[in-house]
Length: 397
Ligand code: ATP
Ligand code: MG
Image 1 (cartoon, rainbow, N blue to C red):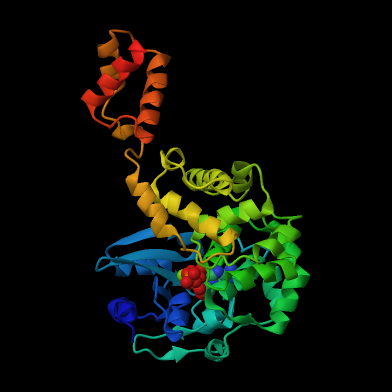
Image 2 (cartoon, rainbow, N blue to C red):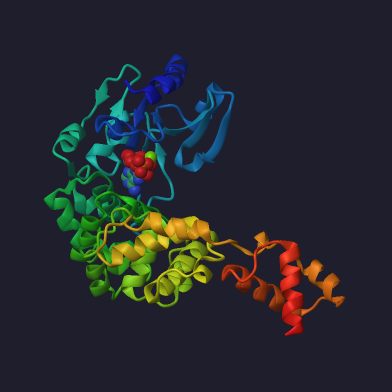
């Protein structure tokens, strides 16, 4: 068994000692069977959240109403979810209430895809009532039960199908992909935040080009924030080899190729965190500059190296060049600029006020700007005394 499961096995043993069942489930079992790295080990149990809390000393309530408790154990945290059936669905969303049950099979039955509906006990024995292992061998994404029903219960599952296709490079079983076309519109009922989580995983997947193509073919993109009407742009996007771009770079190239002008408004529709919006905004702005000219010292100034590298990567992709071509040359250029940002200036506003014997005011900013320019262009070196001399000389001319 994988190390992550060995480490977590004592949790299953503790739960069993208390008289309940407990299994590893979901993504970790799937990824283990795929021989992929395992992120977090999820556990399903017949014990209720309260029962789990009485077994372990360190627990955190994260979603008691959905049956989930986090247990802290030997420096790691584990989500432990009570077997549940999702009896009643309203509005094509996850149910608001869940029924806790004591049957593993029923719990597996409410899961989205057969590959995600395999349980494993502490000895590594698998419980696979829906032939998830076969789906994994055949590299196929198949819903547990009728796709049309399962997508009507929770429309997010459609986005999940496409993101798993992107991450795992699996095919989507015929009936399942037919249902994507038929029920795609139900995605309108799904909270943006949930769609964003899946979309970002899709954009980060190895097979993202095929996944975006599928979003186009099935018309699912029409029900994603800000993308309705962008079929042509998305088709153009998949003509570029975007596979080696990271998440924010992928957002940026998408914005560029789709021709979205108001970056902030678009990303707010996806409810991305403000900090991420700022980063993507900066990348797209610098990309515009890069599209006009080679990097100048001024262009590199006030930009962190990772952002410069990101812009260069996107620029290469847009020009159908290998993603990392030329990166070393640009890095060399970046390293050679004498100052990277205003914080590195060896003079401050206080120095200027002293030298000129003047009070503070907008002139300080202007003056610092001139000094920056002079340093960047090599007219003066970034040393306090040299800068002072240069300023005095300027004043005399
Ligand atoms: P990842 O590796 O990205 O975490 P995952 O399969 O673990 O993939 P999660 O979102 O962490 O995905 O969900 C854990 C498990 O819960 C899934 O494997 C699946 O069994 C079940 N699940 C998650 N979302 C749904 C859903 N919308 N409908 C049915 N089952 C779901
Ligand atoms: Mg998971």
